[in-house]
Length: 223
Image (cartoon, rainbow, N blue to C red; front, side, top):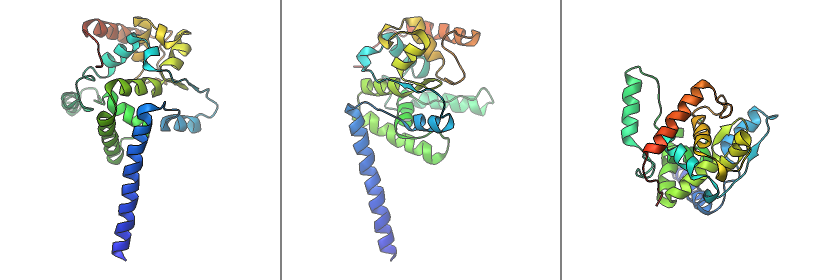
């Protein structure tokens, strides 16, 4: 009886493992139409308008690509999914009582947004690490950034670069300037509270900082 139970559990775990790899491979090539966060937001705010339009990375301004990297994960092109130096710095800051900060990379955020749900439990963080490892193994950096820029929340009911560009600036994502891109990147820590346009004094300061980081970043390449 016990052996049957263990065999049953093993089959379930094996099935979930195979399914997870299958989904990662599917999204290596196909657009991500919907994410768990989008579903959660719908049930939380059923009257809220929904804006999401997938576009290939070539149709997203290089300014916006660089803006999110410099503001969210400056080691994105070099790390393998986890920025251990940033994690150590965050732990030291949090331990010393300074402002609580996270150290999630773009790869981790992509894994969370596409395959998981918001949360801070150890189980959810463990699943995030697992999916981060998978996408770093099976996707290119360009693909990770493409999925990230098409899936993240960039305003109330606004998901992805194209929807954000139209919502905040009335233009396509490919046409965003450096300052417009920085404004969108500036709201990412709290996109349901911050506004990219018109920008508050806080977002204006953060936008200026991001533009400065973009100018100092150097040559930008995902290859």
